[in-house]
Length: 72
Image (tube, rainbow, N blue to C red; front, side, top):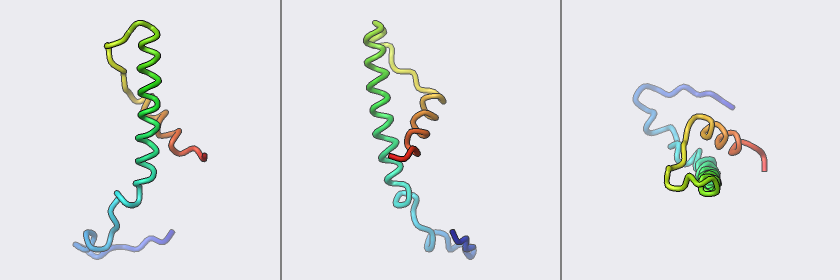
């Protein structure tokens, strides 16, 4: 990794957008979130808590991100 300083006011011309750099990771996270959401909804339905919504919090977020960084 090579760090190169940018001249003032040149970032918008020289730096690549994050959308290109992180697109694959974002797609993986969206897929994992979808799978976890489905699993949590099924579990709530099995416990008779249907319609109360799925609770999202820091634990779910950390779980999804940690799964995204696991090698396949």
